[in-house]
Amino acid sequence: MSGSTHRPEESRRAPAREAILAAHSFPGEYTIKAFGPADEAFRAAAVDLAHAVVGAARVVVSERGTRSGDRVCLTLTLQAERVEDVEEVYARLYSLPTVLLIF
Figure 1 (tube, rainbow, N blue to C red):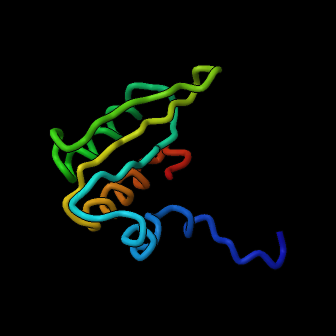
Figure 2 (cartoon, one colour; figure 1 turned 135 degrees about the vertical axis):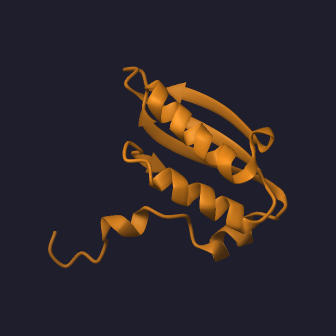
């Protein structure tokens, strides 16, 4: 697309800190949804990354698969102490080569 200023790498990071802080109070609950392949490697990697940032006791995970069964949406509900926790989870999730979308 000519004239487009959108670069793919711009969409592969956490929402702006100001946007997170405008909608959430810390410490508090923050939900991140990560889409990827419906395989154990993606599930385990995504959950392990979140656990590494905030600890296993502060992450609740649920999932929904697509009708075809080839993709999964992991909902990671974090009990985040600070906005930096959220930013770090986003950064680590985006480091997964198989992640398709995060919001």
